[in-house]
Length: 261
Image (cartoon, rainbow, N blue to C red; front, side):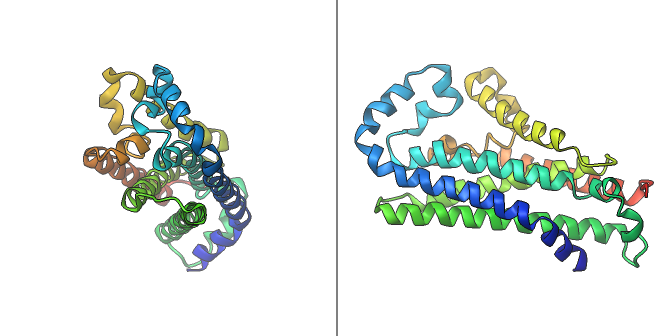
């Protein structure tokens, strides 16, 4: 597991910064809820009647005045976007980074197959994404306990599970793309994650685009749908399949490509 540990060390600073920022912002948002609770009824009614803006963020269904609605709208967006950006940026540099950093000639001279190299890099990505989500969930959960509010813990766990799957899917897609590049493209990684996010918003605004729910993972990681108990098995299974396809294509391409020194 030498490559696994090496990837964890090389991404340690990035992981700590992203985790601290996302977890810290989530804790702050939860901490602000008690001071805003008294005015939440009026704010919730206002947000629920803002037309397409409300529909895009699910505020017409979420119930912004409740703790779960507030958590889904604020903390969920922070973790959903921040976690996806971290997964995308990290995955995009995993395979292409060896060529971009001119370390491929060193790594590939060792008696380790390319499939094992890709697998250990992928395992490091999964471990970091999982750790980020666990820490951020802990920040949110501790914040809820500190402010003394009642939470729907089963719904909260399902929501965080969906966010984790969403980030792993984005990471898997970017992992596959990284095998096609000579050097990591952080712009492409950020662009893909942002495009999937905005596609989710567009689907919320236009019911005619509902078939695209199988394309973006932000559909099944939408707090308004999860807390409402909607059936999301189809989009979730499709998302897992897309992520697995990206990983399989990435490993296959990496095992066959002519890697420049």
